Image (cartoon, rainbow over all chains, first blue to last red; front, side):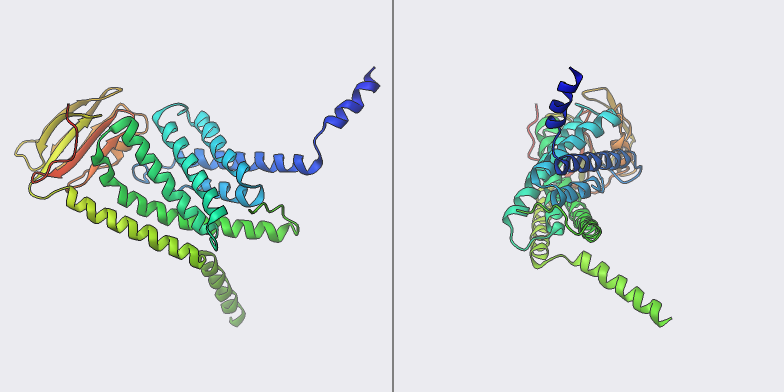
Length: 189
Length: 142
């Protein structure tokens, strides 16, 4: 009876490359969550300011695994990260989730439709989209005063700078990963 | 010595290569910075000029307004969504000294004194904004 059951189990097992991709996605998710939690505990970086280092992992996932996986990773990172920090379903969570979704969608669109763009440009647009969406959500749902937008330019300036630097870091990491594995599973397009 | 200098040069070149981006990246950066500069100049016109006034809002409701350079120190208990935020106006500066929120980012925002500066507490839905008395914010006051 057990002999009859074991071939069924072995047939149901996904192929090795798929398992490898899933393992890579999980590893990247854990890394992104760790960075997300670390960033939230950083003191003294000013109100609302975050370096957005977790987005480097999303960019690496975009190159290594593809757009769908990168978007899923960005959203899952916010959920799992918020669970660890204890901000699940709070205003902070709503801001993080909306920002991550906006950044993810803008980065995917930029990657697909802007010719000649690199991870730096993609990260720049993602970072700016993240900040804009956060302001929009805060203004619409919580503060409801247009005076809030007076804070936007300096925040956007910081977002542009961190976006550029994070993109350069992601570019460096993906180059190193490509050099280490001669046949990377690039998923551009 | 020569070899180490060459190595350092190589590292600098590689760093520059990673930071430079493509022509498309640089064009996007130019557009983004241009947009920020335009927005900033527009905001400078909106915040007005004249004597600085401090407006304290809970959501859409204007709770109080005070001159920033009043003679007395003002302690205002702004009742928000989750409790009371203590707003203090003193010596031409405004700050939040106490807040019921967890992150205390509004407290860490520190002392503000320029027209156009704001302090926001998102969980408590409190906004403290400095505007010029020559122009009001385009705000709906209940």
